[in-house]
Length: 140
Image 1: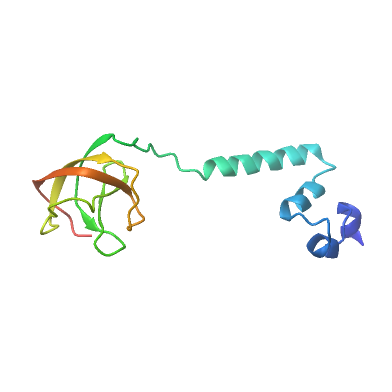
Image 2: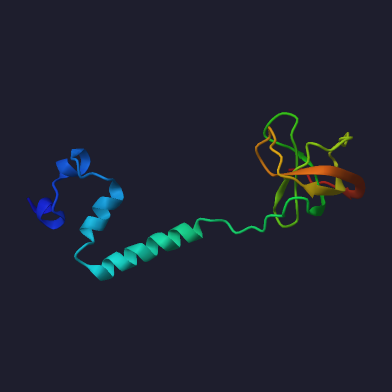
């Protein structure tokens, strides 16, 4: 059985045996004889882990932000969201009074907070002050 001679373990032991630790044990076992291949595999796993993390500058708590844009309805009912020019999404549901129509852009100032929201999206802003801007929002 070629599979057993290459890895030192049968397919049955791999999936049902006591030595089963998971998929990574099998890969490590298969690469055990070839150190160069093992190093390349470890490098590939590390690069994949690093590249999958999005690097977006998160504002710190209590930092004041100023955003100009168009508010839009969030996924959950009563959620109001706004996207900054950098692409960061802010939860502005705590804004009072709310804009009656969302056809014009608004400029707002708010403090970043670590509060949770039922909207489950965006960075929650608190102590929001806003004014209308003359520019019209584009239809999306």
